[in-house]
Image (cartoon, rainbow, N blue to C red; front, side, top):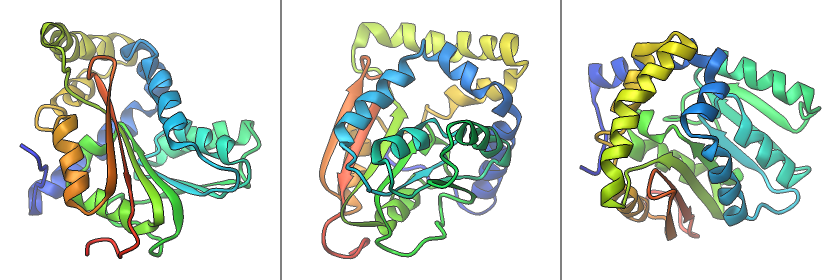
Length: 249
């Protein structure tokens, strides 16, 4: 299965449910990320930043930015370039805003409550469009990728860092046991949120693997698509370049 395209009421209900999940887990989001990924998410983001090779003064929009760790990394790498962090969860943005304030990055980073399916920016605005650990949660991943492609400049990069499916067969059973059984239990014990963390692994079931997602990037018109399975395929980085033609052509 290479698409996640709920329509009508199903699409709306998924948006509402995902919104409620992230509003409720915001206070423990960073702690749970560290625990559940064994802090590997930091290494994955570091690898991603090296591959992106952000230049001084370049700009980016970070979709579904959560508590803004990646947004902050992008701002630091650019030094002076304008960064936008967009998320539909105001609670997440509030926690991110506090981090940004402590780092004195308020002038460089703008936070917007918005929908990744319809970005409030003109075509060809940013050098990069990124989305971290959220593409599997959107109602229509292809629409989000189209929007990312639309708002980056020709030659700009569309970048997704996301959980994926293990590529090493012996590891699969261990991975799925942890993801489906242990993760929700830890969510209940640490964050007092069982159902929310039970849903997170379920969101991966119908999500494309790294090869399928690379094909989607290519089919939507992105050039030079690169896919990097990380930690045995537990996560995957995808990078595509916007060509000189208008997105969608």
